[in-house]
Image (cartoon, rainbow, N blue to C red):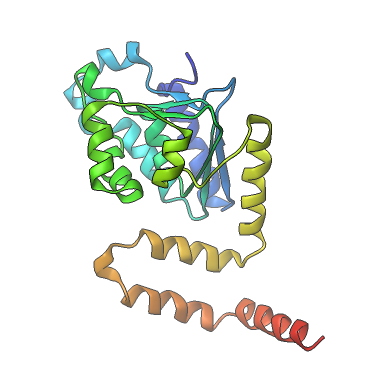
Length: 223
């Protein structure tokens, strides 16, 4: 069902997270058939109860994706609606195609966007724009998503995954530990700054990798 985020997909995402937590790598999340993810499986969602809501089925796995050690890149083509949009919001970087359509239609179905949209979307696009999208259930296209900063760049469908791999390669060229700690700093609450930055930097300042990279940089400058 158009890459619906059903229980089977949630289970697969948890298994993927377990693998990447044990062996950190940059993750590229994409869809298939010109659709990123057209929301939840409504038939399953209709049967969920208040107890299911309190379990946070989608919210839990999206939060796990958000807090993976290495960056997550969402390569979004076509529809990213409801839970599909919230999966994209959980990524660190989002690239898209001209066919992108973002939206959270949950209020029209009698529910709210409860898997991250209410706090992640304001962080990405600002409170006023997030309020408009979540309260009106309006769908925005790639141009608007790009102008709002929801997408970092837009590429033709055939170029989307190569562009995502270019970003991943740029990340891979950097220190793995510095990348992990940069993401940790970015996700830390504002109240933890600047203290956490000093602690993370202290670990890196004392690392052999930092000394080797800086020595190599200085040697290149001499040439």
